Image (cartoon, rainbow, N blue to C red; front, side, top):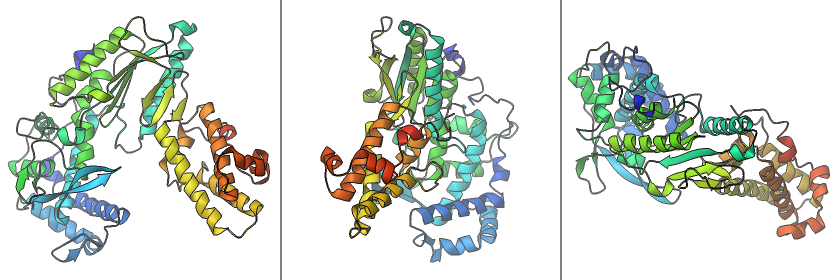
Length: 465
């Protein structure tokens, strides 16, 4: 049952074998694709603050954007004629969450063509993708995966009247250095995958068109010492093609696991979750994950691999002793509990409190000459606005998550208490519980108007799938 999707006969791995493929030659000549790529590149540079920096031969991106229709026609004509030449990119180092990461940078016209090829491959690969893939897809978010897993846990709990019979075997897996380890050498499984999807009605790609695809997926770059290199592993981080390939490269694994009767499967890029009430099915799924990942030239991250037995008491399993008993499962920054409720994990909860504390401090500082009651009402209004279910101005993702998927009442009660402490500290300067001696909790709630996230849970719009 598990192996039926591992090695599809045609190598495409898709659930839609009738898909005719993409006419790559025609797609690379479509002006509208280049126009969209210019618009998307312009939007990205505005967001990251590089709008005025990106230029080529003295021509800024803003000028290209202003004349994008004409520029798109010229670029499409050049690529379609097979006369476009890529320039080597550069590898530069940035720091993300304190860790060094290599990202790729390219000249402007190369970036536009990267966007076009990424769009084409995304269109070609989308029919093969599993509905249980939640990363980098329009209309789908990671919190859909968390909400659906929580719903699956609730259904299991309801179906088992006897608490002693409840329990789900949960596999948590993570691909080791997925960004930098996808093989792109000549023998990589990626190339036959892409060739299959880019055939149009059985006709293979023109060599010149295929060369464009190869140049985007596996570009020639200058390393940090200035040497020209062609990487054998890793896709161009920071470019649109990377997210497309993160989704597509593991699609065989998705179809291997998403159809197992009675099970639950979800993947967000390289973050994998599988659950089943039967230990033997879970064992076979674990073997399948290892086999498929190894066959793709990847390996799992040992320190993040977990076999859990999810149940209310966190008791160990008598059937699969290696599966550790646990009352909750960590998934995408949340904890999913055995009763089907969800809570922010410790890191996200702390990030939320830090963000809200900073907003409140700024408000209190602006009103430093006001009386206590005036400052109290102002900072409570700021907190209410930051956690308003209707506002679209979420600067802190954890605040948005709180409204969408957090249903665990003990955490909501704790957040109510912490939010009141934030208000009192900003207004009185008192740390800890001593501040409640000067300003009682009921004053913060009733007179200053701080909303309760615990009681508000019952009135928030239902967003969880």
